[in-house]
Amino acid sequence: MSMKVATRQVDGITVLDLSGRITLGEGSVTLRDAVHDVLAKGSKHILLNLGNITYIDSSGIGELVSAFTSVKNAGGELKLLNLTKKVHDLLQITKLYTVFDIKDDEASAISAFK
Amino acid sequence: MPDSNNSRVSLTLASSLESVDKVERTAESFAANAGFDEDTVPNIAMAVREAAVNAILHGNAYNPAKQITASFEATSDSLIVRIADQGTGFDPTTVPDPLAAENILRGSGRGIFLIKAFMDEVHFRKLHPGTELTLIKHRAPAQPAA
Image 1 (cartoon, each protein chain N blue to C red):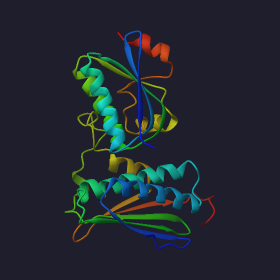
Image 2 (cartoon, each protein chain N blue to C red):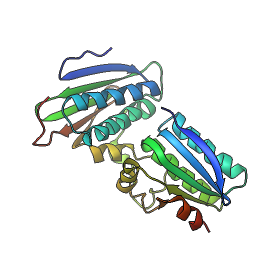
Image 3 (cartoon, one colour):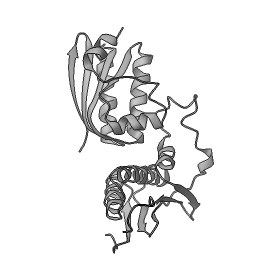
């Protein structure tokens, strides 16, 4: 039910494979901690793989935005990968779809980092 | 405990995240049982979840001495959900537009927007103390009655 994060490195990019729910409480905190951990270790290029995210609420959307801002403020880049239809629709409704750089193919996402 | 029959459920719950999940699950099952389709049910459940979060987080501020109530009613043409807290109340007109350029990168403030996006009618009523949100979803003309 809660969110899980698996971290891996691909060509110098940190990929966070997220699964479960990003909601108020544990899910949002887990995402925040994971992104902060990556930044603290000096990696500034982060790809969030949301392919196994089953649910996201307004708190989770806010956490994605905060992650995007944190990484950008640290001089890095955060991209989103593999949006489910529900997450896609929520980002459209909230007009965040054009704020994020969203990819549906990992290889092209990795190569898109500058 | 819920007081329920075929068309009405009422819950009184503590100000906790567990209550948010319970209200969400209740909304999901109630809307499904009321005959709403599989695309609409998750949207109703999300709107109700956001209302419960507002009641517990912003209304009651997790105060263990305060509770929320959630009631669900299915009529021949609508699903009506009422979520009430015991907080100090708030003015919905003061909520910033999350789509405005200056707010788009804010880390919060999208709950009421999503509630309004997914429901057909949203009404706020001041209680003494607290706030009651009434969320209404109309049935599509072709949908059967509950």
